[in-house]
Image 1 (tube, one colour):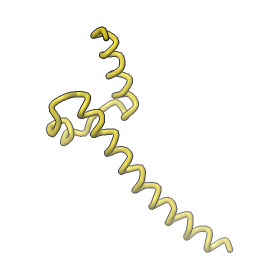
Image 2 (cartoon, one colour):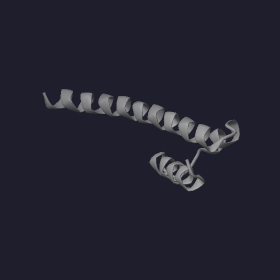
Image 3 (tube, rainbow, N blue to C red):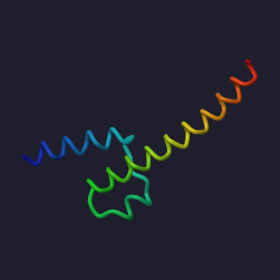
Length: 66
């Protein structure tokens, strides 16, 4: 695989995780690939936390409507 192709893929992967890497993650992982994967996992964990919070709020809201 050419360097340009790898760079394009890494650039796209970085865009998919929001365009930046958390500084703690950047310090903890040696390669950009590992940093991107760690950031993606962190993003999933944050999204799950937000989803649980939303479910609690919506559940409370639905109880009020009933």
